[in-house]
Amino acid sequence: MVLKDIQKNFPFINVVNYGGKDYIGIIINQDQAITSMYDYNALRSNEERKLFLNLGNTWWWESNRMIPINIFLREMNALDYTIVFMNTKDVNVTLGTTVNLNNLTIKRVKRKSVQLIRKPKN
Image (cartoon, rainbow, N blue to C red; front, top):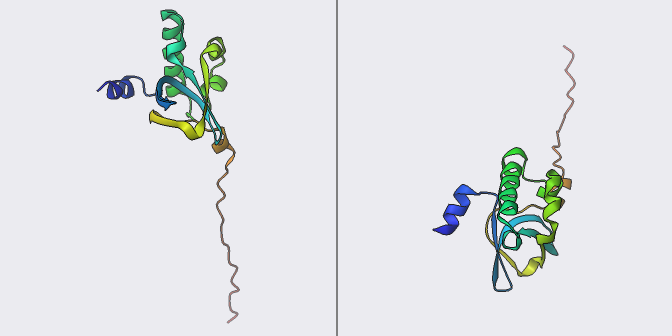
């Protein structure tokens, strides 16, 4: 019930289970080795929580969600003390989407096959 409310009202929020503990926040980047995220529970004041949710909302609706939030919004640098680094193989993402910078470098190449045919002379 609570997870559905979070997903509906705050689609940018991730719920991650790591080491038997649940973390709530926004995943910055998840690659093959390390997952980094802003931990909502580590925020010190209600003003910072409001800022966190407002910046998350801005990032979700104004970006393509492939660029990490800390690159898209420089205002997130004020909340760097809440960043948690986790070993990716032990991370279980319960709710939310993940961002991976490696996916930006993959280019799709469309190959076209062109065949030249001579017209027969009549």
